[in-house]
Length: 482
Image (cartoon, rainbow, N blue to C red; front, side, top):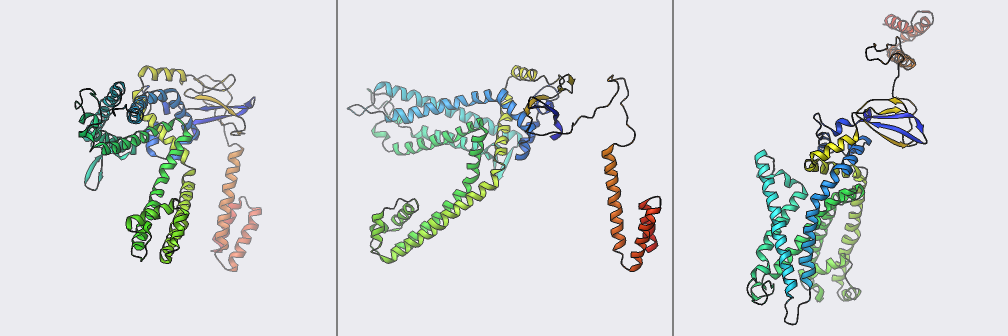
């Protein structure tokens, strides 16, 4: 990738010309979108995508081509979240009248929002998963979990979360009080409160809460709009397993100490059984255990000792261990988190480009003018296929021009100029190689042992002063010593 960048040795008003020759990273052989971005993101190497060439290409494709298509694809999902929130958060908390019923306008609006969710959101989710599953079956694109084949698109957390949301919406349709109360009251057609729906209202509320969390989890895709925010989200995802591991360890000690405390001879009502003891220990970890309850523990020394031991293990040891784990894990991925954010953006660009119209793509390529030669300097025409930007002169100091210039005619019919001999750099390189060879042979001859070797090498050095070649003298001395 470094070979695709040319920087001018001279500066103009504190700025330096930089040419990025990125035509074939953007445009394919037949003018279509190149597969190079997809290949590089599939490689999942964060340092490569942070290279200035890749950063320029991905930022340009994202801002000028893929961003609008991505936002249009997410606009429908955002509308779905707004309608779901209106139905289950705003209208659900509207105060009823004196008879316990909502107004007819509210009931009708709630019914319209509910129908929109089930038809437009759930229907679209079922359709997309059905098509994705069929494509996976046709292409045999599976991964195996034990002995069960699973479509590859579910290996991504977004695909799995989308499937979970679809399943939750299907269950919500079966437990919706609106459908169970439909027609039960002639005066209120879309009422949600009736005797036939009282036993399912609690289950429906839990499903609604789970659906709301899944909606907001899937909307984290919008973090790709900012590389910094995307990097933060990815870091949270990387550190989440450490938090879950710590919670598992904490749960183990809570259950263990709760069982141990239940066997003690004590009469504290807060630690009456295993469930109560586990609840109070969890409050201790979350700093929700009141000071009055600590005073009650002093009446039971054995219970006080058990709680103090639990606090040392959980609060002092496990929580500080979690902090150390998070610090070490964050330090390990800190240098690459921007690279992973750019990998995520490159993946979204590759997935979004098929939805970009051909006319829009051709207009973008035409604006780049990749077939027009790019100047090396004012009046110094260079090669086509590049994009020129101006960077601060102090950003990348360049003292040697990367272009080798030859005198003569610029006519394509003229032969390429040829220089005999070597330039100064080549002469120094040859001299360095000769000295290295001589030192290696001298070290071999000195390591052969014996005084005869020392005298032979000495005579070799002496003859080297008068002979034609110092290297030949070393060879003759080595043979004489042998």
